[in-house]
Image 1 (tube, chains in turn yellow, blue):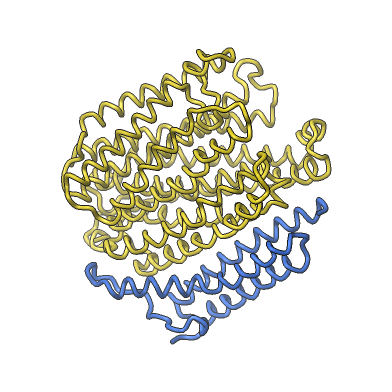
Image 2 (cartoon, chains in turn brown, red; image 1 turned 90 degrees about the vertical axis):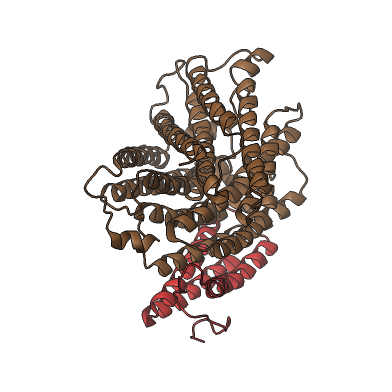
Length: 467
Length: 117
């Protein structure tokens, strides 16, 4: 095994830990809606939400980085360039994340001055890590980009997947720098801030997961390079073609010119089209394999990625993306519902698929099946469906009463929190959150015990199915 | 737009994409299993998709250009599964290095969507 693959496994392990932290703080955030005075003035909702959302970003980002470190040396058949420094930066990143989480929990906030920005909270929504940590994340991302680009150059083997990945890493790093400057004009500030948030999620991350899924399919079902690369080019073109200007749906209400209504609405309406293509591709592959793949958990999580992406990003997104609807729905629990489902479908399922693939190969089990992964798969997906369903009900109720009838006033907001439908939806969300947490526990146990239980079948027939 | 029509429009828009997904899924299943039942279900799902699109166009207070976009999307959704399937078949047929066979032969006729070529 290459050192880069061992590093990849460390990143995937750290990613799984962050996934757990995200769930814990997500559950805590959900309880505030039921008991608003919980931990009041001790650990407020805003702090829990910060850890929850930054945990989401980090577990996915670490999952992507880990997946690429895992696949990259196999792709170029050599060790990754600068691996020593990359290993060092992994531990630096883990230490930095630990310190930041502890600061978020125990310090939380400070005076509105430079010191707080550098040491406590940068004050940028979704990228709240203090400035020193943000610079550290940028350094890790730059080092990661260097690892990939230098390795590709040294190997002299610019495969299609690697070329797409390299082209994507440059905007990935550059867009993160967008987290730093702050502007006194809020419209301008939000205009550029959305470049980071939207273009990371709906452009650069989509390409990253596309590359990772391409490698996954090659390793999982033996798909040929020519097939996955051809498909990757088409997908990347379609996703970027619709996703980049889909950015406009974030510009509807921040003080930008009116033409963003047309641009944002039009390109957002096109966004589900390539997602349907992905669903067709997933079923095609499933049909080709007759659902008989050696590593079944990884295969099913790959399928879940295609369907979850379509439902979460496509269906949930299109419901609320046109300006006339978005006027009422933006910033409600409806948005939270879409966000949860889309992140889970587009990225979460993909990272879990790579986890099963990498760990099974590391422990010498090409073929994999059993009962526990099915429980984990069912609980995680049922939990997510339940949470997003409940949030959707709450969000529609909010858009209807608080926004459309109540006129988005403070009184309407407060009245909304006590409405039965909203309250019941919040309870339901927490209940399904607990189911999701049980699924996570089953996932971790399954991954830890993988290869050590009798359910793992390594028959020659199953191994042959995966080769 | 009234509060009621806002919710109804949003739900119709969601149903529109969800039905497109159901159509894509059933189309693929009909190609994989070649059963008459799946073919009928595929036609039915596309008919429902057209009905939802018609409801959006006729009953909702969306701006006319969004209605045009929904109607155009409805037509494009018809083509996506067969075009994608044909593309994937062509890719796999052109590549025999991994020994896999396409799950079904190529449908050459886009508009003869529900008929075997």
